[in-house]
Image (cartoon, rainbow, N blue to C red; front, side, top):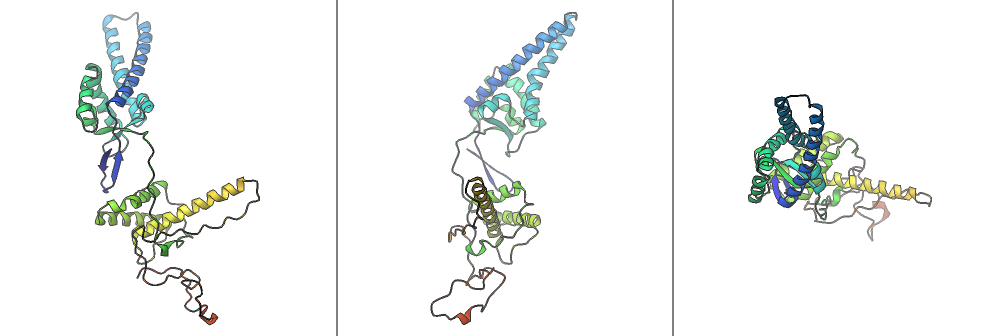
Length: 314
């Protein structure tokens, strides 16, 4: 696996394609291109029987440039790095930073491919791919691209750390409809990798993600709540809502009469996320930190009741 670090100090795990899979993908692409070239050449030859030799030679050169070189460039540009051979082998061309390629990347790769693949029958490209640590040929080096494997064995996903117990259910009334999927993905990636980042860099990323989340929801986190804890609590709330929707849909689809689903009790894993709990008891909305204790009278009910339902860390 090739580890690339973005500007936000996030590690991208990419699996570079090696020579066997790249050679198979190139063979499929060349077979398709040569078939198209022969078919177009036959049609043009029939249509140009009345032309002189100079015109036929010019047309042949134009066909070579347009079909054998321009064709792969156009396909990689329009498909964002997935030609027919790469699609069949589960490969894709991306930039060095993991982003999709553009026309200039495909142009450089296609121009270099005409030299190192077509004119040398793939010898130069094979040697360069074997020498390179990430299996890149010369076209990839000059274009700043990398061929990666898209279809890899599925790994066990890393669970998002749970929020602190005193934040579970705190954002149940938060409107999350305006938060895009890209922001959810960025928050999830940060939460699963925050212990791998430098504390200063991780705090900066958490603050930026929290500010963007506040902009989307319109509600700021409570005073004294760390940005990472705020992100974990909001993600936990979204997961709880998704679970309730799934359970409600399953009950409605069954033959039994539907019943209103009860909200699942939050599962608390003390200390698993590395968040500090507040000092002292936390109000739960009813005004008491727990149930009635033995020996206490009913005259204490309602004493110290709070409607906030939240106590920031001490």
